[in-house]
Image 1: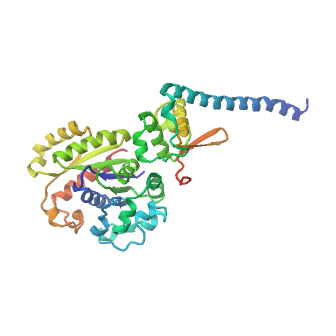
Image 2: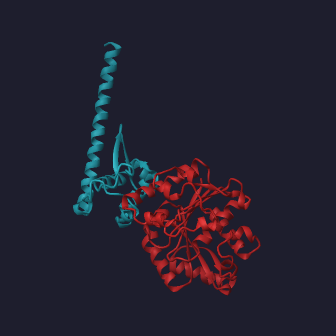
Image 3: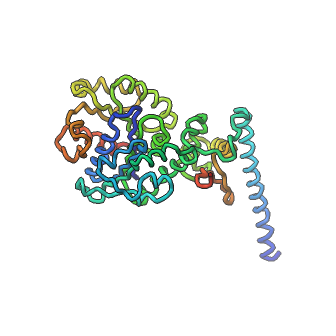
Length: 259
Length: 127
């Protein structure tokens, strides 16, 4: 049985897209069949990141009930040497589509939740996918909460920035606890010296004390990441980079988790 | 007594007993609802509308005990009180009461098939 993993955060710019994309690719390289979905309908980014601007159908169409999910998925496994194992579903980046998605009512959101929940049957069961990875919008928005409710595991990306720590803590307590979601934290943009083995124990106990959930991984500030300008799939282009090793550890842990 | 007479006289009491059992089960469900209404006060269960959408914000604002039941029905799609109870590790009678409350509140629909009652979120029928 496959898993649905949502990558979420309280604030923007914490590395959700970086983590979800590279996590999805790493899992595909492990031999898993993976589908990465851009659920950030307010600021879509996968279409640009993956240079796919002419999709026939978008996830917007699937959630609107216009088409089934297989029309939306694009097989780009050949780009990373994982034939038939890496698919993406994109959010429509046009301003018109963004405006349309931000004016939906509660009934629409309820149906959208139903359509996200039914991916378990249509992709994990019927098409034997091992993973669906949701890249979500930051904060407490309908689309993100729908994704969280539909997921088996939520990976929360956070930095050590004080407002991010406090906001994330409140979000876990007031939202995640209510849904009883299995949640793990990835600390991103940590000072390199703090992320080393000696500092890691301290970070581990900080995460446990502040958030009350396990620490899944620590990603230090690597200047190579912003230097790549979001134009490459990092773990694919730079297999020897420490970032790739860390994502490998994170993916291996997720692969072992019982959810 | 002919064999067909025997069959009739043997079958009737069973049918009658099944009818009684069915009625008792329905009565029990109604009692459970009444008990819950008394426990929590009636106002909490008054429906917002005959068909209130069960979206995530609504789930968030529900009391904990009902949220657990509602989330389970969301996940299962369509379920009996028994199936929900297996997931939540609570007693069937408890889940039955909560499910019926959610029906009264307009969040779930209930459909009887034979002796079983199925609960589901009516996503397509609204609006």
